[in-house]
Image 1 (tube, rainbow, N blue to C red):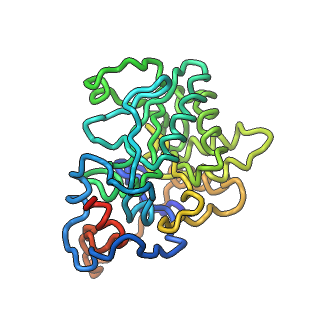
Image 2: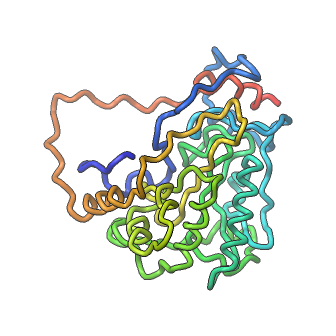
Length: 306
């Protein structure tokens, strides 16, 4: 688990859900090798495709470097959910993800003050890098769940573009604020207890609060990881589906409940260490390189073309 350093503030990364661990497996080319010399910027390709590919469902590659074949579209509104920010066209995912968010929304609807869930970004119709925002969410197995209680499931498209989720943290993410309730904890616990889930990312103060309150079986806490900027939503990442040959799983979390690690994040927020003096002779950081089609798994050429 990556730890906070003295020179990184919690506010870094507010706009993006980042990769947390290395790829654990090698993705084998199984659909196409046509993108070997394809220098097109991948986000310009995948960010403009309006529909899913005409292929069997498959997450391709790693969460922050891949695409998705045969995606399913989450209905904009269901009995216990509403998809938000519809103009982004990011309410797509692998069938496992669509099933998961619907199941979790039904659980949320049983909590006091909640009629279900407001669902943020999942993936684009064919996954891949996005024109704005996330570094991950590329293979149809990531979803952002708003922390705002979904007490009105009759929001118009315009409403869904303009309302925002509720901030649940104070002191830069070190603690929960007064809006945090046992229902929030119950929903996160239900998500983390689901065997389909690999990890959940949320602000450090929420993890520490759940560590304080958890009773009985605490094994679910292992999947809940502190991460930058997740104070309006929590990010659910599913495991690669069983039998998938082209999905690269994330390394499992370290053993234990992770509570000491979350407490260390909080301590670094509350008592930050002074940054070391700048080195005037240090080279300038290299500019971020955009992912090209050639840098994605070979199968993504066929996903984009079908």
